Length: 385
Image (cartoon, rainbow, N blue to C red; front, side, top):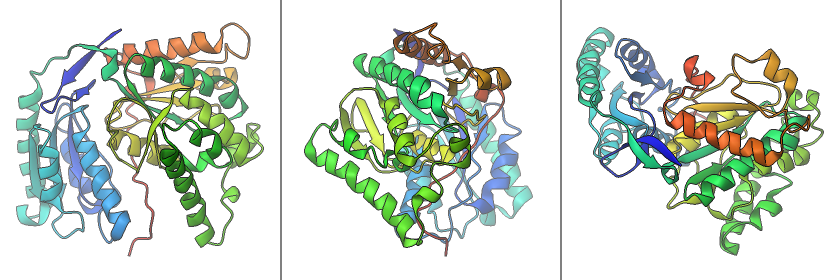
């Protein structure tokens, strides 16, 4: 199978050609959004963090912002800083520039305030737009795809139909030489031993178990049982009775390929194949982590229905619930309820999902992308001080 992709200077392949405006702190998000709204091809991420964070939490925010800038779906980057935040503005820009893509910087306090920074930003973003407008996608092999797999608003049909079908699509992509990622550590609880057995080495399996224990440990520090939030009220209304049942349905998304490694949040895979990433079960933060890790397309199963997307990676919505597909047809791309009705097998729908990934890579817009769903959220692991 072939796709249409943009080969970046560092050799990575993207399927979109965005100009990304990165605010390094919440204080510069409004200027970033105002600039993106006036430049063709530009998109801003609504960063709500970037200041008064410490230690691993601070490092995670910086890593995620850099990862978004380095994502191969991005052709050029404008970094907007306030000037006094914790995120090192110019270091972020310099690290993104190691990919070879054009990167510009504006600091609001140095520019002279909102109006002057916006004016300068419009000029620089316009120049970036002209620089990358001539880039044309070329025919590439399917193995260049890096696919994130997400679920949200799950119900009983997710574990029975749409998640296993995604697992088939993941296995097909991995067999073709591509890369896929499973995340949501919260939803490995009770099924972590099953995933650990699939890791390439015992050491990687132990790493996966450690991430799950740390996730539970953080909840215990708050003197709460994580089962108070998982499954969610919507999951329970959709027929999921326990966190273990939810986890056993969730891990079907990863198919049967061996797990090459377990990644930190926002970490880039070192090779091809199936990877697991440490992330929360919250959809937006989970997708943000995988896209920061280089995912260029997302497949997203939802039994209850959710419209969410991503600023730089197309998100394909799949539901195994016939009622949800009918009620939210404006948001759903693939009806996997045909598995439950007996019209198709899990394998047939899995192939249909991979075919859709190819179509999207060739320019087709899934509904979340066409409706402008650009949700973004960085996983915080500590309070803001």
